Image (cartoon, rainbow over all chains, first blue to last red; front, side, top):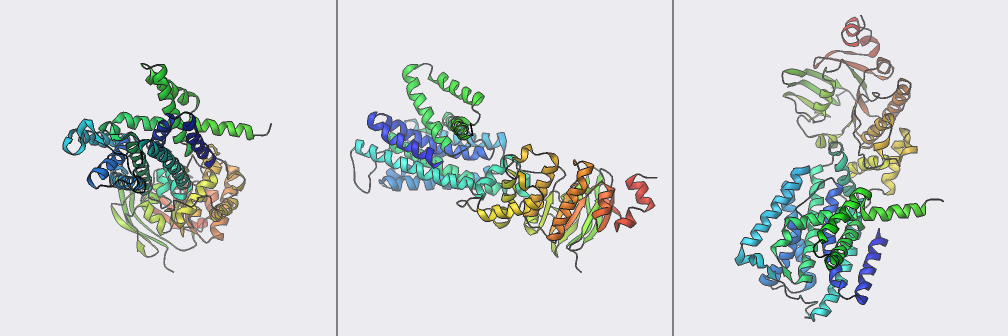
Length: 311
Length: 247
């Protein structure tokens, strides 16, 4: 697992040296990859959230508010505080979300994210309405750097965060609590008959997944320098599910592979066929669903198994 | 000796059908009890009532001196009652070993997010149980693709990994060929005796009942119609006629 994430990080770190404009693409890909990892975690438990853009937006707006209202300007502090705020939001919303399954779980997540979208759009005085809020360039250890230097440091910080998050979530998914989450998908009743709370297991996963999405949103906010209500719109939630499925939910690298793939396809598809980039993405997803049900990461794993099998 | 499980005047009805109609039972430590009776007589309902899947309309269930009436399956399992199901309840996306390791982890406390489930101590414990139940050679197989006999054993292995003081087995030999029944029950009973687990099993095969049970409870219309040692109960004229269907 570590090999894949580390390889991605090396590629992500080196490519922008040759192709500088890719630095931003990779930073955004990691931010969405983190949020998609949260969605993928829930998918392992058989739970589809089509409202996780809620936490992505909470993380992003938390950065904007912390800078504006609390005067916090340090990058690390902003990311930590925004993740913490989103995790608490996930804990609160998760408390009643754990009572629902299947389509009800999916729709309730969607509903809450759309309520949040409406609030962000309408509460103009606080949120800047549809114009959103500007996010100034944060400081690094109290030093105000130029935007270009900041972007390089941000990219490196994001890569470290990606590796750290991937390692931690990988450990979590292989732990008793993570395996219990996977067991929920196949037999929740049996889990209760082991003396394990299915709701508690889901609540823990939901909270962690919200925190991941919040961290992703916070990274997005500082990378883009602007937050808008569209960050919580249902299409963003759909994109997170798309990334999770595209990358594959069989392992942690899947979410990041899916995010990088989608960002690159999106970037090049817009250039190649500005009117039809959505069709290209749709086609990519169809290919994955029909031919790679375990996603791109599943394909890599399958190729590795073929190579390792005796001739 | 105090009973490990004391059931008093248990009632439940489903749309006018009395599935439990005043059940009174005492089960003593280290007993192996067989429950027999026609289909629909309320045997599985009784297991559901004891394990909290259904709340009784009235009556009480006391386990090791403490009332467990109306508690959730999760709480009752933690108190020391485990259950194996008529249709095996397994985690189909996980291997046999992972299924049993999850039960071992559940006993130790599931709230560990940074240490792997597949740690050596859990593996060793799960493998020991699987070896006892002759599943050691297939522990890496996904439970979804196992034959029914192995699925039954895997379900029982999960229940045993919880180290219960009382184990409730719902038709452990159903779906298993008649030639395999005896070896399956030999295996189960050997483990139960070795680990001093009190057990109650629902069974339709009278040969199995006669061979393994210390005591038989005869179920009819939601209540215990007769009880006693197998050689007495299974040869009583009323039981033969009413329950077993031999005139």
